[in-house]
Amino acid sequence: MPEIAKTKESAKNPIRCHWCLNDPLYIKYHDEEWGQPVHDDKKLFEFLILESFQAGLSWLTILKKRENFRQAFAGFEVKKVAQFDEQKIQTLMLDAGIIRNQLKIRAAVNNAQRFIEIQKEFGSFSNYVWQFVGNKPQINAIVKPGDIKPTSAISDAMSKDMGKRGFKFRGSTICYAFMQAMGLVDDHLNTCHKKTKRR
Image (cartoon, rainbow, N blue to C red; front, side):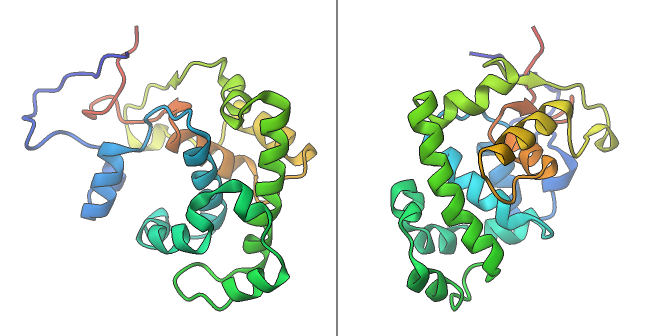
């Protein structure tokens, strides 16, 4: 297991990344999820959906609607979402608890179908996405907020390959945000208490 970089701050008041400090929900997400390596396909699918809906919006907006998305998208069960029909899509368009964007809703159903194809080809979606980072989290040196980039050569490659496989709403920026969330890259500030120490 990777060691966590130590800071001089107390456990009650640790140093955190700048972006999460304005909301308790954000802080909880930062401390418990963001940047932690994920290999579970169900959670990977959840974030594939959530990141695609985030496009053009704040991540906090998505976090606040996360449970609504969970209910709307069958608990993020990929096989169930892949079978959503036109009637279900129109029902989702009336659901004020989620982002009612028809293109994104249709993309989620399409992406569920593509997700299953990936699972059949690679054994799991985890095997597919983690190959892009050589099956090892990429730990970036982040001295200041401006050091965090919106894309990378790896997210470019992932986006291109997913596009060839028929995924929608999978641009490089979305792919990179997905990589950050699922721990394929560690973009915590070097001083953050969640930063993985380089070996």
